[in-house]
Length: 303
Ligand SMILES: Nc1ncnc2c1ncn2[C@@H]1O[C@H](COP(=O)(O)OP(=O)(O)O)[C@@H](O)[C@H]1O
Ligand SMILES: [Mg+2]
Image 1: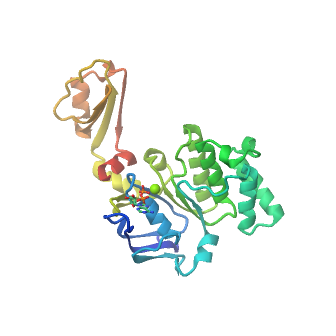
Image 2: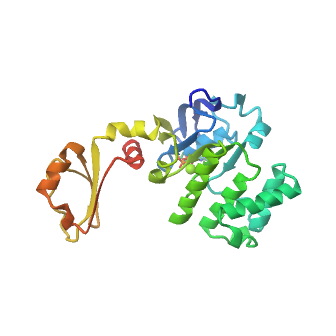
Image 3: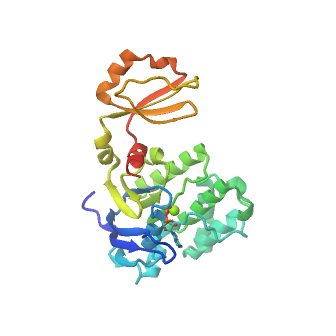
């Protein structure tokens, strides 16, 4: 979609916290277009949260600038709060409210009338499966439930841009799937621009269009998942468990990546797959899988 306008223009962002010796972000530049679903990956401490806080105007960069729909983020704070729904990594300010109050108040704060705010509250609670928790106080929720409430609050007011810091963290697998489906619908049906940080690379790969990978504060990869996977395309990942204490001897063209508690992950060239199948009976292992590279492999490769 090269003709769509830029939502975000991030140019040469650098940030060093006073308390730390190394930079949290170093010369980061990238653009996000309207309607894009963009994912940020990177290990703990790679600088992801610092980066998106600068994209919200919550942290002032030492160098560089961020434009949102062409406007400088730091000189237009009101425009930013009206345009972007931000879900922080942890802080939740509405702890003493009930679930339904929290969603209602944030909708109202974002400018909806009493009636519209009530309507949106009911819609959001239903969308995220929070109906049965409506009268519970936020403080008493489990980690995952609180995450869902935070997402509901972020969605109120229907901001055209969503910036989400680890939205699927702490969710059980079925809730995670529900959230990914909801985000995909918001992106595809309503054309919302979504920027999110996640560690669930395999799940993210199903929905994100473009990904940026951060390492030690630098953007080390940027592109569509398929582009980033291309160099790994000739690689096949083999994983299996073995019941014995000693790992089985593998042919030398199979590179063992990890071996822990009987679980082995190894890589081989796709050209060697048929040879391996002839030389070893993999079905003798109780569990084995073979698959081509995933976004997680790309992530591990860079991180
Ligand atoms: N408020 C802060 N004060 C000092 N150092 C910080 C602060 N926030 C983050 N850092 C440091 O900056 C680096 C990047 O952190 P962060 O952006 O939170 O990473 P991520 O979200 O990728 O885990 C880390 O080394 C972290 O310890
Ligand atoms: Mg973070």
